Figure: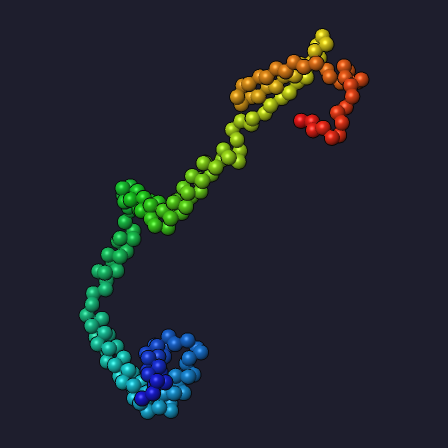
Length: 175
């Protein structure tokens, strides 16, 4: 017996039962027609199939299927209690596929909650500066909302007073 015979004999059962893919049917049929060992194995499997079929048919006649099917119909028609419906609902809710989605959803919600403040701050830290000219002095006010800070600057107008001033030379460093 060759390796090809071993492969064909593995496929004989599927071929006889009609379960072999169409791409392999012709290969098995042609090999069995040409090989006496594989043809003998096919005949042995056909005899075994016939004996099993007769045995099952004789026992099936003795089996009482009517009570079995009556029980199946009765269980299908029976109204379920509220507790059994609740238990089925809970099994569906906490079953593996839904639980897997729930864990993933919880991880996403957790990430969103803890990164929300980073991308969308609760209150923006805005500051405003106002300049007020009053009685020869200039005043600037800085208001910062987040820290509730106000800074007041008092300064003289240097542009009007220093029109005659000489600019520093280019060689001097001015800071």
